[in-house]
Image (cartoon, rainbow, N blue to C red):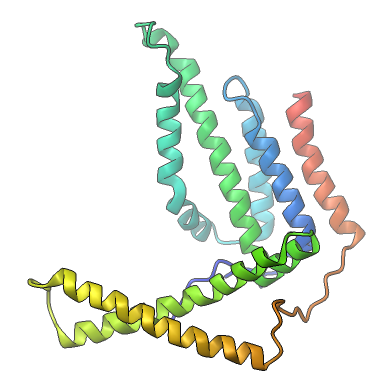
Length: 250
């Protein structure tokens, strides 16, 4: 079975890929807070400068633009709806002339769109430039509760197991009932969901017992030790400092 992993391009070699995952998590969180706390209106220049810095970091990552666009298109409908409906939600219904106020309302909607898009792009870069298990290990080093990272790791692994069983059962159903289902469609799909759940449950039990037999005790081992270098700190501080400079001095 072929799957699409969120860390598909984590094997690339770039200045962003070589950063310590702890530094990347902190810098990404700081960037999102700085960008999203911008006022809704009157700061479009700042948002354009934020976009330039984020796009420069994207170019440094050397991740295909088509892949990033596909990832962003998944959430873009919700961002677009928020950007379109925000001006409507803040309109003063007592003032009838909408034409005279269209510019600030349009700037507010554009601001919402840019802030949400930049935050989404930063999260995509974070998850794409680092292996998922190393991100979880970095979160553990940053004192995130172990139960959160362990559940996330198991969920990430078992979701592919669920996808495998869904493809297998769909192929088996199509081989037995070729063509379009005309009768009993709800019953057939309900039985298929039940089979997927039962098979996934059985396979997950086997996998979990195999993990226990290999010494799993709630923590996933990482063979590659994390080393925080001075260059990692300098690059991350420079990135955050540029954003702060734009926020408070421009």
